[in-house]
Image 1 (cartoon, rainbow, N blue to C red):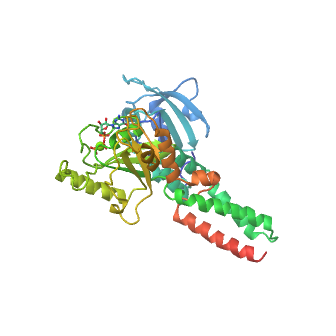
Image 2 (image 1 turned 90 degrees about the vertical axis):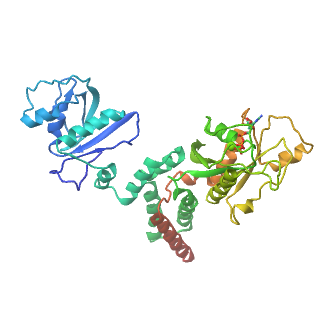
Image 3 (image 1 turned 120 degrees about the horizontal axis):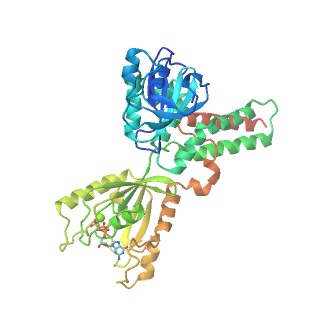
Length: 414
Ligand SMILES: Nc1nc2c(ncn2[C@@H]2O[C@H](COP(=O)(O)OP(=O)(O)OP(=O)(O)O)[C@@H](O)[C@H]2O)c(=O)[nH]1
Ligand SMILES: [Mg+2]
């Protein structure tokens, strides 16, 4: 990585370039004349190479000794110092990225990265955020935004789309259209090619504008319908409490999963009781839970309306309760493994878009497929729309809108 043009050489800064969670690898960046002194005090390269002889762009592998710097820097002597640390050294890779800038690559444990950062800070370096580091690193606002989104995103597809934007796919698409508009020789063929690019960009904008935001999918249904069991089956672990007692779930409970490569927050809710059910009225706490479920449903992207298919159908809940413009809804039948206790089995099945069993796994793949097709219909309808540039900011969308208008004018002159 090239280091900050606008950070001056007299500055001495250090930053953690990898996410702050535990990861396989940790990378820290250091800039400043004093960096070499600190590195020399801690780092013992394998083989003959010393860090003084390293050329820009080359690497050295060696041991990092944690407890060295203070005494060496204080005495100002580097040569001939006996390395006295009793701690086990870490194997690190040192990269010289510029005349006074470096990266240290180490395993991703928290303690070792904190220790490395601390070594530079105690020698006078300022610990800056990775955002500040990249902002000074010749990155424009858009690429900073992409990097920030990449750090937040969970799903494979969102990460893939963002990585393509970092590689300049959007800019290339825009240049292609601008070339057509600026060319002195107009042609229908060029117009069609440019229109195809703009169509693709417009098609992908809805998703592009919310890549770091997971989808919210809420499960609503009567008590004991199997909502929590279904959520657990989709998540792959026992996230929600399941029991044969009606009214087990009381609160709104969110669980992050990745379905078909998209980050989804599944939201479990308190079950509805039949209205005027004197045998099983909802308690005060359950009523509060149901209220919360309805509020959460208003801002969800998708409702799963869950109902056990082995029981007689009752009109327990109407979507109008969520609001006039409620999110799209999928009817999900549950407990398909149980014997049918009612007459009209075919009718019951046909009313459910997807029939599932949390116990046997029946229908779960189909349900995931239907969920993603409903949330991201673009994947099915125009599969190539995420393969190139994707507008990810309102500024990007304005550029696309403006080019669309210019293409319309261009087409009138043909
Ligand atoms: N046989 C069978 N039983 C199921 C299935 N799904 C849920 N159950 C059972 O149905 C009962 C209720 O399941 P829950 O998942 O707690 O239902 P819920 O809709 O979350 O219930 P509340 O939280 O009370 O609203 C439990 O005894 C489950 O074991 C299924 O697919 N097959
Ligand atoms: Mg429940």
